[in-house]
Image (cartoon, rainbow, N blue to C red; front, top):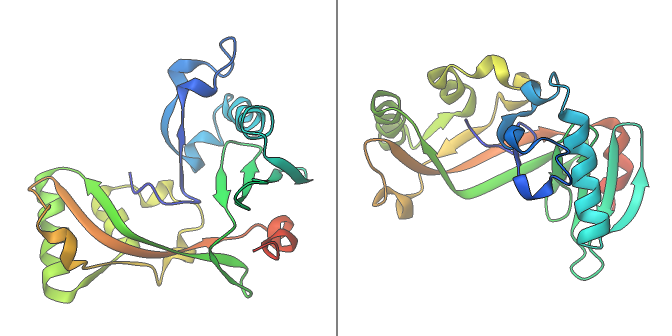
Length: 192
């Protein structure tokens, strides 16, 4: 799994209250897969409960599909999706057309089978980059991506500081990618 914001969610078992959502559904999910599962709304509600009731974030706005919350202590702004997604809005570069968030993760690690990792490492060594969609194809997961066209100019880039930690089944790189911003969140991107 690529574990990119806007594409995946880590559902923590501690968010379950009295068995809702079921703890056995916790873990890493592609958001496209989660959206088709009956527990998706339960996870969405669990996120809202955790951020507003437990962590005491302020509720900024509620739309049919999103709850926007802000941490009064740090100013962090998050969008919590009805179907379990969590998007960080603060501290990201917002692109106006099409609306979205430019993301950079300088220390992104991917663990997988040796032949796939070897191919990614080889291309990073040769070209200093490999497209996110190419990596998704190598993993056999492009069909699980939401709006894959939005990732067409996204790439993993060689980060020399991470090469020493590479192994036959793990590769670290800087990843730069785009997360489309749903239209209903565009007004709240101004909170940045």
